[in-house]
Amino acid sequence: MFIKEASELSGATQRAIRLYESLGLLKVPRSGRYRVYNESDIRLIKIIKEAQSVGITLAELASLKCEKEGFDWRQVIEVLIKKQYDIAAQIKALEVRKDRLEDYKKSISDCLEGVDSDL
Image (cartoon, rainbow, N blue to C red):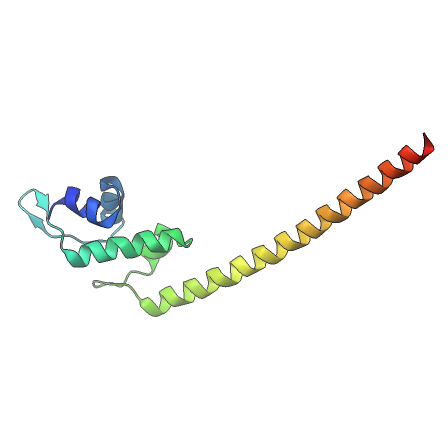
């Protein structure tokens, strides 16, 4: 199949597929002037899109690509674990900020109550 059908089946734009190829994430054989995609290519495009949706950058994916075809899946798992830790740390930091906002809001409310009682 050609890029238009690969795009439709994978949900990736033709531009994104060409980008994946230019970064070496996807190697597609040519038939004459045209690239010919197969089901394996479609699965890989979907995997790349899913990786992006969970916060893995294309640069990170490119660094996880093995010399030969394929990815170092153990390293991919390590990256996913690191992303989980990073997200947990961000959640904790946001919870602290949320608590500080609540304290600040209460302080302002207390000040306003004091002003209102003086009137």
